[in-house]
Image (cartoon, rainbow, N blue to C red; front, side, top):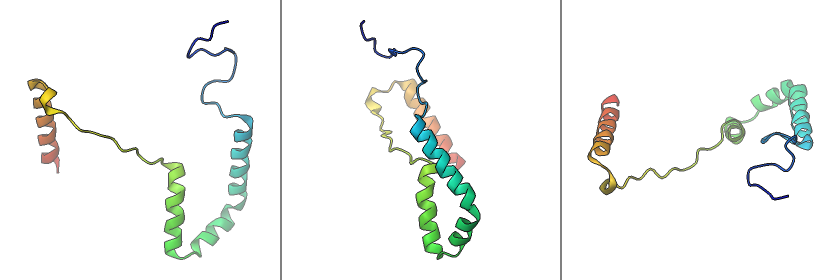
Length: 99
């Protein structure tokens, strides 16, 4: 049997992106822990110094909103056609007028 890239050896296996049982169980456990202790956690959080509260919020945000990757948006103007240059100029001009 030849391996074909992108095709599973087990077509009836789990779908791509499906969490395994250990991960599912762990997430369920963390959710239960959070839900069962939320009032106490909230009270403790409110009693922390403001600087510590911001530190904790900053750390938690990475789980709710992943960091954006750096993107290289450089343009080699020498390789653009006249039409493409017009689009770039108009887009930049419009964005400057919006500010």
